[in-house]
Image 1 (cartoon, one colour):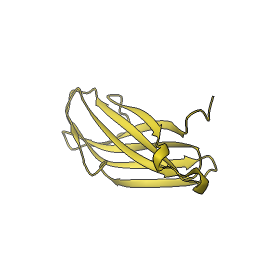
Image 2: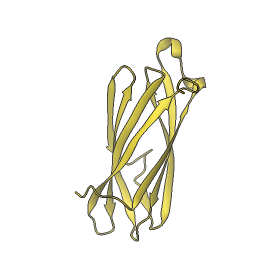
Image 3: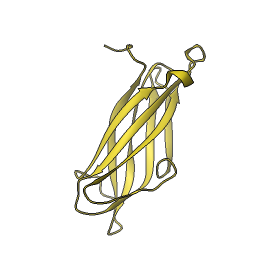
Length: 126
């Protein structure tokens, strides 16, 4: 499995979902929107994902599974795929990172890393 993926770029935006959160019960809900851009000249398919979610107490949760939001999207050359999902942590601040296993049109698997991104309620960090 190749780990080099300079032609796949991931952009992430996270958002605190106040109406679903219950701070008094240490329940903080976050949505994240990820855009996967295929900058290569070949079609790729997202096969699986692995996330490591860490809250500010150091509690970690690993999530693994096929595809994303019930799909294994095919992303054409010079195209992109955007999806929204969510997670719950026990603190107002956390971090999430992980990777996707992708397959190119020759059936070769490779990993696309997703850099760490912050989960934080508004105005808690400067």
